[in-house]
Amino acid sequence: MDIQTLTSFFLQYGAIFIFLIVLFEYLNLPGFPAGVIMPMAGIWAAKGNISFLAAMVITVSAGLLGSWILYFFGRIGGALFLPWYVKRFPKQELLIQKNLELLRKKGAAGVFISKLIPMIRTVISIPAGMIKMDFLSYSISSAGGIFIWNFVLVGAGYWMGDAALNLFT
Image (cartoon, rainbow, N blue to C red; front, side, top):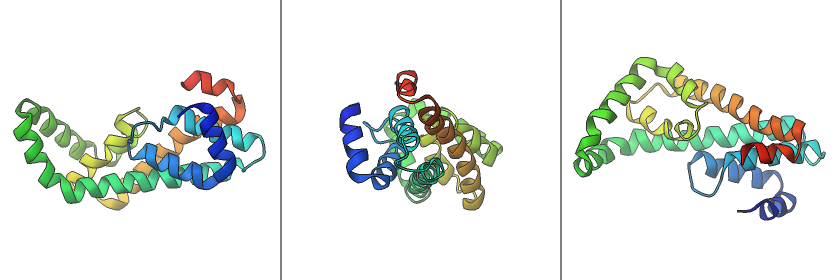
């Protein structure tokens, strides 16, 4: 998606569009880069089309919903998927087990930090579900990381305007 298309959708569908695009981005679907979507939500807020608070509530809610979906995907399907994956890629098994064990040790702090690292921030939800991390702890740590990540990106758009898009794209 290019900037003109995104702008057109923002104007046509408003907050629903922001929610859906951020949700898709947190589901790690290709074509929905946070470095474009969230600063645009901030720019939109700066132009008075939505409040900054509303943009944050929408993006954090969408991010949390996307994280929950991947968490439950890992919790329900992880036990089925992991043996299949390891059978196909046996050299990965040691690394996967090592990372799952690290997540067990770090727990909520590991999820929080992971939510601040590009790519890892969306993928971490699946292993958190696979190890059956406490859902409340997972949700609180995810919400904290999501809030910080989204605040930086939406805030950049809000305070820096169109120049923020050049920074993140």
